[in-house]
Length: 305
Image 1: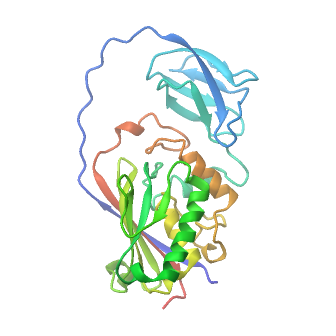
Image 2 (image 1 turned 135 degrees about the vertical axis):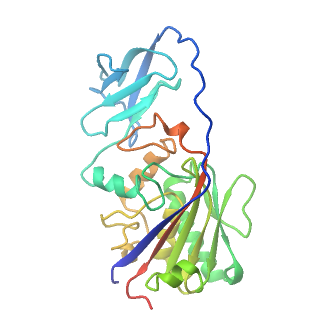
């Protein structure tokens, strides 16, 4: 299959947010026994330099432990070989995870897949609740298309289903956000980009995916497992890495499942607050803009009519 193309567009909504509140008295820091583990394996990491507010670092022992005097909200910096530098705040949980940096999952790959400018805005963007893909129009009665979409959703669930469940249903159940799936050859975005076969629109607020839609040009496009799985990957907040895989526009037609590297990053994303910025900094994640925005990304074969 020939390389696939992609286009992206950001439509901004209203922004808002209150000003900072006046700080109260700062309590005396208390000793906290931290546990540092790998976000990939959950195993303790020794030799991690942990510091707070520019103070002298304390190195974790063989059990991944280090004790520092902290308040809730204290600034923390963690550095260790083989992991991205993490900047975070102590939020009362002494267990801290480190984001692994591997040969097949280096900084460039993570930047393109996770901290992307397609579905994200340069920060971790993902759902925080279950997602239901809702077929619209003629897709509602097409059993073959439904089966393809259920297989694609199952591929997502195999990676993240224990935290964020994905399903296909005629209506989204309570507590699940809806992503509409439809066929519309007259979609304005597809009309302007005739080489594309699908367009995904994702509505976000504070880097949390709230709703969206996937629109295919033709009914046959809605039945391509590789394309459907790729678009559903966007519904998790993934971008287009250059590295071969399901989410790469150059190899999308060759994959029906996420690669090991893609799966690793998806699982780490679940361990990070929406709004976390590269390389691994969530200190300002909770104070991102309250306004909504819609990200639009189109995908498909350059050879498509």
